[in-house]
Amino acid sequence: MTEALHVVTGAFGYSGRWIAHRLLEKGVRVRTLTNAIGRDDPFDGRVEVHPIDFENHEAMVESLRGAEVLYNTYWVRYNHHSRNFDHGIAVENTRKLFAAAAEAGVERIIHFSVAHPDKAPDWTYFRGKVAVEKILHESSHSYAILRPTVLFGGGRNVLINNIAWMLRKFPVFGVFGMGNYPIQPVHVKDVARVAVEQGELRENVTIDVTGPETFRYKEYIGLMVKSMGLRRLIIPMPSMVGWMFGKFLGVILQDLVITRAEIKGLKRGLMASDEEPLGVLKFSEWIAEHGSEFGKRYQNDLKERKYRLPKKNE
Image (cartoon, rainbow, N blue to C red):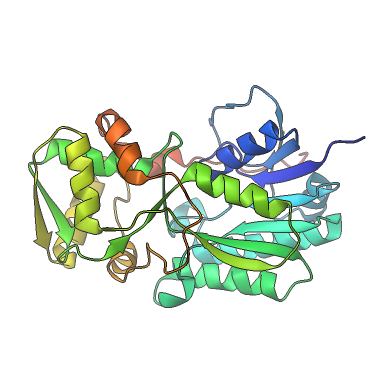
């Protein structure tokens, strides 16, 4: 009997890596579509690697042919026109990917969105997520749209690491506004579990994927401080001041530390959900065990996101 083939976009990335890992544990044949440069292969060649060229429809169809499920983790964090990625381009690329999946006969799409995408129409990141969800809703695909909040665990942890780096560098940490807005982190392994479970179903669903604990943002930072064995003064700060400080740090670090839209989304409570949590792994327990490991060096998200252009013969 031929083993099932599932395709994961970005299986060497953050969430995609854990989806691929869980699929391999279940004996599923896994293929990834990626153009990332220099990502290590944690699977020792067990995951088939195909380049992805959104401008080559035929090649995408062939890469997806025979797959039962497509797990789409593809997106971009911010607009960076000089590197030819922004949210508008990401929407069109995803549309092309879904069209190729339809022609290839893919049975189901598990698509990663974000919690509350319709509550931030002034942020192109969220507008793009809404647009992609609409594409799926209007398609003939069987689909599950997963809306995670903020991820933790599983190795990369850029957000947590860089907050920890600031906590190590500065004796005072400013939270945007009063810091009373909610944040409900979810472990990446829980997200992968839910994704793979949905891959086995065929009902069309849109669900939030959240962890079992909700904190006020200043409590979230306080847990990090405690886990690192530090004593830090956590103070309220005007959002504009926080953004300007992030902008200043970004110049020094040559990275995009924080965007104004991300600050707005955080303060609006978009990093938490009212739905029943599907995650079981607790941030409080995880950070207590691992907090001391973070922040020893800054992880430059912009520099680490390197992609190659597809070759014409691929």
